[in-house]
Image (cartoon, rainbow, N blue to C red):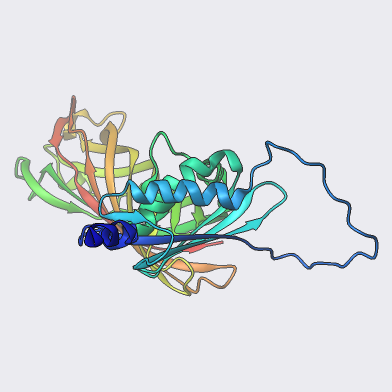
Length: 347
């Protein structure tokens, strides 16, 4: 009988299963305001039977959530670990700091109000006991006002004018004349037109958005007298308008690598030399093509602390279309992948 009575007087924590961690909960109301002592005696507030003590209310909810976490139990004393929560009052609500001794983890919620204490208790308990950020505990049922308000804040970016020059390299298969007396043959070529760009680059912390207009001018053309039989094709000019999304690896550094991607709509003009007997009005006949291309971008910005800084940028272009068109003087049927290497200034 004496043994039975002794067992009944033992605290619940001593009878807990060995795989259960006992946790004490301590909620305190703090203040970061400067207190001023008034000479006038303080008036006693009228008694309100429905007034809620925020510390007691939050503590009871947290104890409930801890006890319902598998492997944990909230107790009054004799605990193995402790959860300490501090409430700092604001004009509306509180700022919450919560710490768990088991992982030495501390979580913060910038602003929470009394009607959110149930959801807050659930998320704080899970975050602290499972050693995870409180942002990872959100669900459809426990969203706090602080979650929504944080998403409404915007980052003020900076906008810049961009000017750049470079060389575009494009692989194409075009009809070419190897000699004045030979007929044209399909040959694989590397076209290297000169490229010029004007655009806008917006920077938003580690991210960037670039909109641009580009023009290209062919750098190599065969003289019509060297192709009396006609049919030889050359790249004359081109242009593009596109949008790139960028990611900076060192957003606040004096220099930074960046990478990204996007797309552009491009147009190109080719010309085919007419046979010698058909050159009454012109020596060449033009044909046009265009479509959408997907881009990959990699670059390096330097001297970023100055009002005018510079960049070197390389791109890879993969058109989503084929050039397949013809005129009286001949035809062009090719795919035009390529890349761009340019250097530019950012104002």
